[in-house]
Amino acid sequence: MSLLSTPFDPARDTAVVTGAGNGIGRAIALALVGEGVRTVLADVSEERVSAAVKAAARPELALPWVGDLSSLESCDALLGTAVAAFGQVTHFVHSASPPRREADHALAVDRTTWQEMHAVNLDAGFHLSREIAKRLIAAKQPGSFLFLTSLHAGTPRNLPHYSTAKAAMAMLVKELAKTYGRYNIRVNALVPGAIAAGGFIADPSLARHIPLGRLGEADDLAPMALAVLSNKLSAYVTGAAFVVDGGLSLTNWFEPPELEG
Image 1 (cartoon, one colour):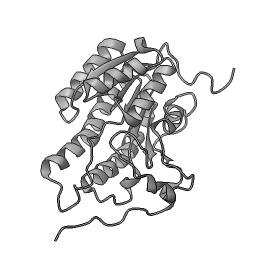
Image 2 (cartoon, rainbow, N blue to C red; image 1 turned 90 degrees about the horizontal axis):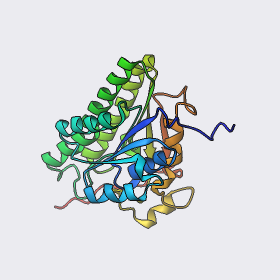
Image 3 (cartoon, rainbow, N blue to C red; image 1 turned 180 degrees about the horizontal axis):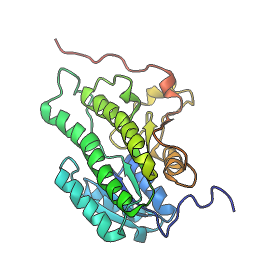
Image 4 (tube, rainbow, N blue to C red; image 1 turned 30 degrees about the horizontal axis):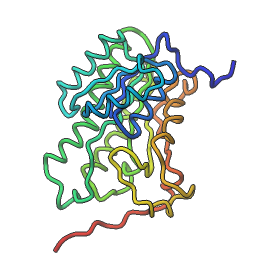
């Protein structure tokens, strides 16, 4: 049997994917469902998540959930839905992130926008992953978590609320990997480049900075995500960050923001 033929165990493996209504989260969620993994697709938009479920290769394995993960009460509701449906969650993908506007630079971003960005990316990611881990530890079962960070965890983006949230997530991955490894729970990061999907509206001219010569698409991330999530393919991988950017990080492409006055 090919090593790559069965990366997941449909009889056991289940997943929760946040931000699953569009972009990278949707691509990863649909890829998991395509591998036979029962998956909760969580998103703030009922319209988007319903469309994602309909697009799944096996819609009967895709369970939609709608809510705003900036609230920990909503996070608990998501977990309650997943546990009620599956009994146990073995895989967690945190891709949810509020939309970002180029106008929200350091002199313009307001407190509400700052707090929401950190709440959805960092607070929800920590809370959801910890609660899932507690259940896996109690059941003495392995797990695999994947956080969507950013190249801007280490490179300024002119959007301080976004880059600082992603930088914190990058360290959270390492902290959780170090703590949970003894329980056979792996935690890794996927680091997208310029992906023309979700909340990022890519300028086509950006392609000139990318060695592979094109902007990325959400589906470019899904194969790597599945490989890292799979306890069969990546059993000895934790605390790692996998860059999928066509080589964009080899260059420095953002200019300082335009400031009025």
